[in-house]
Length: 351
Ligand SMILES: Cc1ncc(COP(=O)(O)O)c(C=O)c1O
Image 1 (cartoon, rainbow, N blue to C red):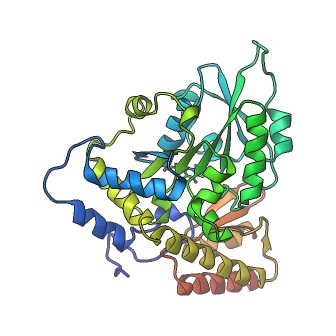
Image 2 (image 1 turned 30 degrees about the vertical axis):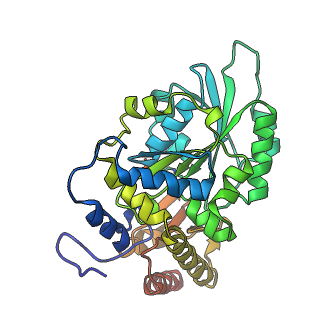
Image 3 (image 1 turned 90 degrees about the horizontal axis):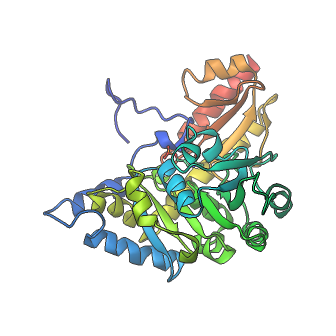
């Protein structure tokens, strides 16, 4: 691991997998394609290879559109899946609702129908309850159900749960978008291929996450059912998500997906989360508030303890009202990082 310098502290905290470093294989892949000229805007050989790799994972109909970030993947996807009079049903906790600065509303002109959930997950019943108002011109027409895998609350939809939500959406004429910023963590947690949670479960469009799983930057829209989108290529450009030097985004995604780097990184992050969960559960007074099914842990600890702890180990307070905190493990979190944090937590709680 890197040594601390004035500009580059080596400490790893638990604030976000976005704060993690870049996997060395990804940096190597960037160096490898950094030779000569290649056609721009996705006409390059590396992006061609990415298309093949993505079809291997997601099926022969899958079409991949690399983008810069997760907000872009979500907003471009939702635009391509909807009309100007559409609404999108999603959990209240969805990133598209809470942490994208209203991009779905501003850029895509969509209305979000937000559903309160205890665990960040939609169910067929919730889809039935909230996807309403069809044919009523006073209301936006529900067009898309958007779910997040793994969820913003660190929980995971099984393949069966995903298929049930997708069936409920499809029965009502809605299509299904998955925000897969952490889909690798979900697949690793369940021990299933990516396709089992997406194509085979009836998901129509996936925002595939790379940044949180070891990339420098880069995500991909993966259209699983091309019948459910329109104008994707145009919308990506007009939404400022078309990289001219696309080979550098594609090379990172190939590095992640061609072998098993996606799975190794995600499995490691999940294992670190399980290790931290076990240690935290052993500390009197710490309450774990969500099932730990991927790489994120939610806990209730006293606010003064959180304040003191985060001076050494950065992490976020998730809910200011209750003091609930969020700890995220990454592909580069080490067992020592977890043990040091858990020891500090135990000491603070005892003190
Ligand atoms: C669930 C989820 N979706 C999407 C994103 C992508 O966000 P960004 O636009 O910052 O890449 C994030 C990032 O934190 C996320 O947690």
